[in-house]
Image (cartoon, rainbow, N blue to C red; front, side, top):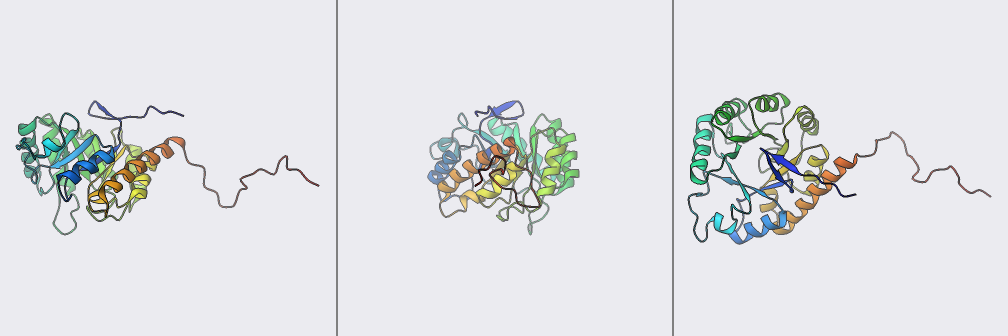
Length: 260
């Protein structure tokens, strides 16, 4: 059965539900190859680590054209609301990007989001005309506050950034999905394809990842695996899984069984 199933964020429609980062690869050639293999249409860029003003030969924009991909500038490396707002305003000045990923980290040790500073920054950015996709803890209360503040997508972590531990609290992810009227995308902590599939089976609208692909032994192959996992997980969610049972049930019914 063919399903016309697309992802809409801030009024723009995408066919891929996998978003990927552009950092940590060996070189730009590998970055481009992995992005292509992933099928992603949205790519994240750390404004504090990539020179978005550079547009000539050899630049990120030369390898991955903004005319082909939706650039999602992010405020990775920011520790206060003011710092994050300044960083994302700079991205808009450089490229006109107003769809942004807001990320405000609490400390260097665990890299968990600072919920209070994230909410404060979200309110300022929304007021300033940005379409904010907010990275947050797997906390339904924090997620709801960010949605109420006007964020166009909520991005709860699956596990600490770069840990590859997978979805540590599936119940909370499901609660966030069930309460939200904007897309929910798992961000951070995915390690392998099964983690991505689980996120989609929980009802998430998409998955964002970087290290899970860039840190693999074969990043381009992992990118393709992640693409397939997101598709499979989404299809399974739409299909509706069978009910779990406490006992066995024969695959073939007893009724009509020949005897003698």
